[in-house]
Length: 290
Image (cartoon, rainbow, N blue to C red):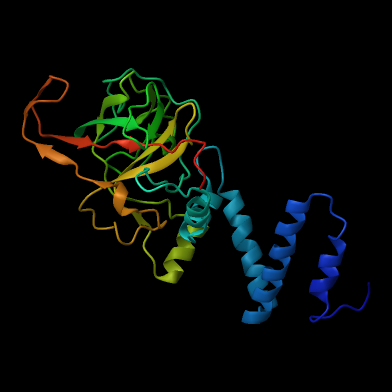
């Protein structure tokens, strides 16, 4: 087809997709083209603005590496990640809510035994975490696999440090036969998402801050249950109501309780103040309809 104009270009593009054998892909691409073209028409996009957008996406790609995922940051800060998470993780009342995955997950994190110090030298005040993995009826789920990761007191994940060989504040462990788990780590602190790249410039231009409230990441798996990807947020954090990635859920906010020097939950003697966090997780059986 020749001589297309601003009124006929959309249907011409869609016509090229008509024979696509993958029905779901055709549905997605059809909607994408329609919305992109409608957006350009609605804002009367200029060529300079279009090119600036191309440059922004190019820079976003250039910032990606095995230690940083700028496109996930972009998705997170635009609320798209949380939207997709919410619509794909509807659960019965009482189940632990899901939230965003984040850009700093690492596969095959080091294995620890229950009770170990997973901080492994990460900066921060000592914190003892304990809880139980249960089903929606309150029954303990034995031997659930828990992966956890967090930033240190300076607001950085281990993978953000150059030349750091060992993982810190990152672990895989298994709950016991009674569903209980416990480990030692460091206190979660608020931190800014990486904002030295194109996503950070976008936030600055929008007049938005890059801060996330203090939290621990959890990824929990157990046979017969939906995988849970979530955070536990620290109560009282100043950014709970303005999380840069829109991930906070009230049910995921918990108290980090401060204790004076003394005997810790694992019976060790602490000569400095320490914190405790208690939080139970409730998994949704795979058979449950959303």
